[in-house]
Picture (cartoon, rainbow, N blue to C red):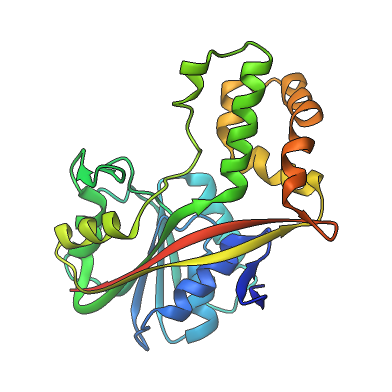
Length: 275
């Protein structure tokens, strides 16, 4: 659960739920509305909506990953909401009529595949955002969250680069282009994407959070999944991953230790727009 600590909001290691609640709290919900969650993942945004509106809404969740859809369906088995539907669907081709939804939520699906956030220019068609705009009702609101910065993952990336050089697995010029494992975006760039799709009354800002890990082991467990580029580059070799954990990680993570815990910053962009 999110809490305020030293004037900076603190999220748990199960931060998807915390950020979903924050996004829904900041949005303008339509009572008795028809609500879509694009890239629903485990359904965190729809759970937060259900907690706010109860049964007075129609909920729809789409994701292109069938396993995520199954997770979301299972999560709602314990929630007393009957009017919820999940469907496998690609965000670039939403199978809904124009002007279908009062609210649309979209958390962390990433837009770096269509927009270069360093040069602030499009590199592909703005299909996802335009589809979201198309199915939103006039006067409705779309709410987005996306990453601006993840200190824990970028720390893991830096230590991983050091390991690759230390073990002569990669050369210096080869490690510079290793992914940071998430779509790192900006307020300026995201606003351009929304404007290009046709949104108006755009409000957008970045908010800093801190995440606290109780131990290096807890941090590493999350990083093994979140910083997927490490597993991918090492060909999922458990011996190399354990060697990385043993020889490189402790010395790099200790700088973030405070009173026995490990504290990192996560910065999230929240954006809202109307049709």
